[in-house]
Every structure is written in C-alpha cells, then in structure tokens.
Amino acid sequence: MGISSGPPIIGIQNINKAFQVGKNQVDVLKGVDLNIMPGEFVILFGQSGCGKSTLLNTIIGLERPNSGDIIIRGRKLYDLGEDARAKVRQDRFGIVHQQANWIKSLNVVENVAYPLMISGYSRRAAIKRAERTLELLKLAEFSRYTPTELSGGQQQKVSICRAIINNPWIIVADEPTGNLDTVSADEVMGIFKTINEQARRTILMVSHNPEYEKYATKVIYMKDGIIEKIVNRKDVKVDEDQYPSDLLAMARGEVL
Image (cartoon, rainbow, N blue to C red; front, side, top):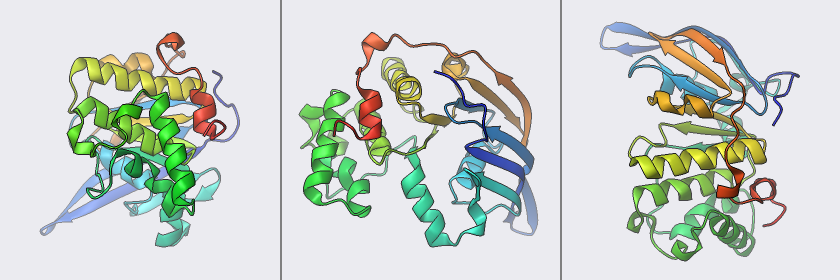
C-alpha cells in the first residue's frame, strides 16, 4: 500500500498543553510538531506521563491545546465549536480504547450499530451493517451476547467493528492491547494492519510494546512532552490469507 505524498491528513503544529495541578502548572505537551500522511500506520511510544494520550485526545478534539493548531484535512479543528468538533470526531475518526465503554443496555450487535444510528441510519439498516461487520471478523455468533460476556480479545475485536462501522478516515487506538494476552493482542494488531493495508485507512496508535514497531510505517518516540525521534519504516506486509479478504469493501461500506 502506498503512502500519500500529498498534504497530511493530520497536521499537528506547535501544540502546547498544560494542566493546572493545585497551584502548579504542569506542561504536558511542549511545542509538538508532526504530520501524519494518509495511509500511514503511526505508533506513538513513550513512558507513562510523556504526553502520548494527551496528544491523542488533542488530535480528536477532546483536549483544547493552550496554543498551536490541529489540522484535519486542511481544517483547523479548534476553530470549530464543540458540537462541530464532536461531529468531526463521530464522522472522521474511529476510536478504540484500552477498555471499551459499552452501552450496558445494548447487546453486541446493537453496540456496534450505535454509531450508525446516531448518524441517522434506520435501526434496521444499522443492525444489518453491524451484523455483516461482525461476520467478517468472525464474531457473528456473539451478536446477541452482552459485550461483557465476551473475553477481552473478543471485546476488542467488537470495539474495532464499532470503530470502523462509520467508514472513518482515521482509526485512533489508545493502548488497545494493554489488557490482552499475547495471542489475542497479536490477533488485534493483525486486524489493525489489515485495515491499514487493505482498507487504506490511517492508523494512529499509542503503545508501550516495542514489538509492535514491525506493524508501523512511522514510529514516534515521545519523552517529557516532546517528540524525541521519528523513524519512518518500510511497510511490512501481513499474511493476508489470515484475515478477511473483503475488509476493503467492509470499510468502504460496499458489502454491508
């Protein structure tokens, strides 16, 4: 899969972010500059407290920086009001957390379908698309379970289904394998890599695990609120026979 040589999908320009803790100001992000190109698989590495998650939250519009700009496809995110930023987050980002936040009154397929329903899809159309997404990731048998009945690895796969259901430009994942065993974590990383390669989606992930560098096209090392080093890597292909061959069509909504 080629990386676009055009304008960045995410432009991060001189971002500074500080929090007030008691009488003290804690500088968390200190002049962060970074371009993320369409189709990249970017992994942010760094020790706890280095600013990775704060940067992620700033990029998706949840943490307004003290100064600097986040630019999504040429659009300054923080020039928008709160409701408009929420709309960008809903439509353009698919978000996977370390621990999923489920709507407890809904079953698995309803949780996956929920982003579509709040975007205006009918319940019937949203459920149909969610069922197809679960089927492609081999989770169809669990569609009527409650999410908390599933294993940690199964829950994260369901989270990925929910993240891609709206056909987002960018998948953002904050320590998505942090609570998983090695086998489940490798399966989840393989799914992310397949979405990156087959569906040509940009992936932005926070991780502590250096073994995941092999999945990335760009590795960002953070320390004490700054970017210490950027490493661009050649794309490493996954064994596509392990994963659904129509993930590209799934992400584009063509088969749903």
